[in-house]
Image (cartoon, rainbow, N blue to C red; front, side, top):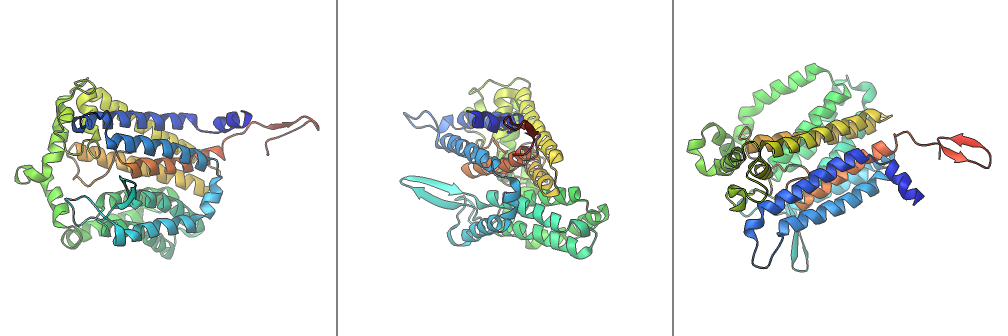
Length: 390
């Protein structure tokens, strides 16, 4: 009991409560979004079951990782990088994707009896990138003003980004770029380099539009500008936006939203989960979701400030950037401000991979908290010596 009490005291219970609250809200929303698809005799959908299992397993793994000194995790960066890259490369052999997207290979299929499971390696690659990039920044910290080191850091960021682009996962590619940019900024890279990068992206965009984007990706961007000409492409986002707007201030009530309960919004349990909150819980429900994420990101940044070393700080910054970027892109999609590129809302969208891996990432943050938090001194009564060391 003493060990359990000590473990809890050294755990960031405030951040843990925010994560669990977000997951519970997400499970309820997914349950609501999938009720219309239940067969006779079913009480809960497969999506909700998978999500519950992923959250429970994720919480267990999160707490186990939190008990491991993050310095050990940093030293294992070659293993973390190797496993995640191999999983990504395996997509080119066994990978699959949605039936309507023959150009995408983002999932690894597994079968347990009659139960099919799909794992998305890019979710694990995000965590690996944050860990390895934190190590790389630390190694180059004394020479970050050198062009060669900046180019090597850019190459580090380009490798995972290009891997996910090749598999057709443009959403994850955007998240990688945002994590990369935030970590570079927090590392102290001079602003002139960011200005050069922005100008390069703007200049290269026509080439990217023609050579990198496929027809579907181009259509999704054009659909925001000319919705009447791409009614089939914009349909999901339009229905999601209509569902959110129909909820007005207080919503239609949980399990009572016409759009949600009739399956009008495609993939409402996944990318469009915000439409469930907006329609059934209204503006209040959406603000509750945003407040949860805002408090969560601020808390992770607070843990970063507690870190006594740069790698611990940078890993927390990377996780905060990952959560914030996914929330910004997902909400932008739901409000038709950004193209639909397949980004889940952390902790809340259905999906085993995303829910499992977000807790793995949080485990690293909890480890930084645990091994930097002030500890109660240990009392050696026999020799009457008090010391903060174990």
